[in-house]
Length: 487
Figure 1 (cartoon, rainbow, N blue to C red):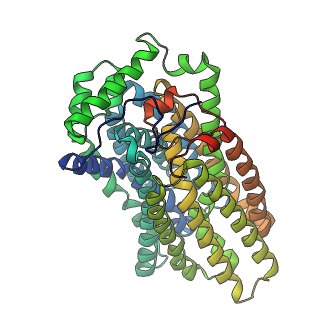
Figure 2 (spheres, rainbow, N blue to C red):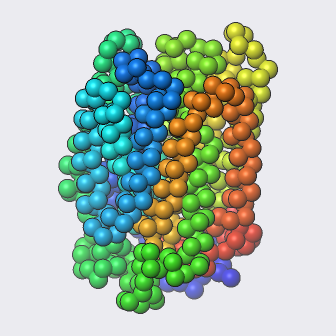
Figure 3 (cartoon, rainbow, N blue to C red):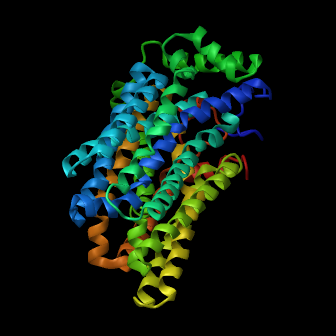
């Protein structure tokens, strides 16, 4: 059993020189900012439908079923994008893959804005989904591979923060445009068109961002890997970290299987991928994205008018950003498993309270919409503070280097499949079961997620990616007893 020192690194390993301060820290921050524009696009494209859907439905003649198709088409596209993103990133590299995704974001936006009917809109949403799914796989892997282990969680977590900033931006843009332009023809096209701006910024920025040093080292390009590390580390740290990366690669041997060959030939790797997929699916089955996609509809169902719901819908977005900032501060202070367990406990309680409030407070009661809004805000805050950032950070850390992008792609594809299914059926479920039945159902799933996290998810905080990939992944019970960092 591996113990840890006060730093959180396993004993018996040579400590790396400190990261230090200086221009290299600023360069690392710029690299992270550019890459996380992919997260901003992810958030805007998934959140903009929240306010654009109702005017779009009126102009294109959508029914509740076709509303679900428009919403979920992006999500099903994201399943494919996530599955392909890992493979493309392994073959081409992280940097060119993210650059390509910026182009797909832009093209998908143009198609959606110009869509004259349902069919073209679905095509555009699928293209955006390919880009969103690819970004959700490749950007976290890139950030994890370029970050020092000491603050890998907070650096990788910036992508999730940018996702909720993108969603908040979508809510604010929707509210401003809806207020200024009303619900006239074409207002939803303006809402969608804003997404083109960060897509251009991501493309231009990625042309100047370096490749992942770990991807370069895995392909024997150690000189290039050192050049990248030296740009975002002190010289002593760059040399020592490259040595650790090379030594970790040597333990598997130059002919070691990678990708699907490695995965299918090792039951331990299969288990890690199944755990990663479970983490992703559990996060989606909280129903968080049903609030992000259909928040306005939920608030209208609770008793708000459509115009009021469009404005107050910004509040959950603001709380999500605040929760994300708190989560980043806690990433290097609280173990990942502890964060996830607290998060699922809080969100399950929120689900029960939302269901109870909608049951006890009858439609027409003036307190009903405000109580439900407060509970929705509490749910979103709990999700963002304890679950969303931690989920993406753990997924970026938990897979060994031989299958990191592939494992991330499989896990995120499962995440998006669950997301897509919820996006497709949520309007029909709310219509059939109401808010009460819907959120009681989410609460039941939350209890199952708690059991899964407790029993299956390993601790990854305080280890370099090479150590996460080589140290045996212990069960939750073992991890509780021996990862002393931060306790």
